Amino acid sequence: MNKIKLILLPINVLDATLRKFKEYGKKSLEAFAIWVGKEKNTNFIIKDVWIPTQYNTILSYYVPDIDVHKINVELNKKNYSAIAQLHTHPENAFHSCIDDNYSILTLPGSFSIVVPDFGNISIRDSLNKMVVYRLINKEWVLQSKIKVNKLFKIIE
Ligand SMILES: [Zn+2]
Image 1 (cartoon, rainbow, N blue to C red):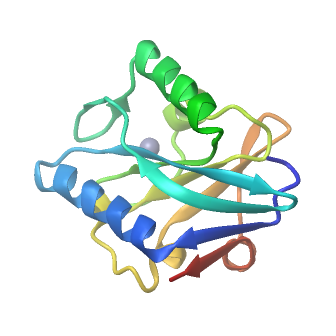
Image 2 (image 1 turned 180 degrees about the horizontal axis):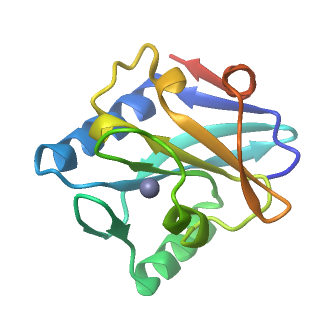
């Protein structure tokens, strides 16, 4: 994923992601999702949001190993890659120690996105509200808003 410079994010995928997050949020639960799609040269086209089997609390989520395995099987089957993992926080968005150490995506250059307020954010400025990290040299590095706005392009 290191060479990806532009990620095309369909608005319906973004909308579906936030709606799912809000469903969990109504029950005061964090939630986890991944954005999957296809690489094309230095572009990545997001095709779908996947919500794997997960166990959630107000402060955490957990995806069992078997379900992580299922994600990889499904990615292979569809010839997709996972570009980003996303999860919600009850309030502020940041990457906690647990988030750093317990990541489902492990490919260099992939993204980890933290969504504040259980996903109760407007679609229009959602990318500015989310906090985006990229896996660089085995560390999740916070990406500036300017970078995020260059990297992600919302499409109809
Ligand atoms: Zn977290």
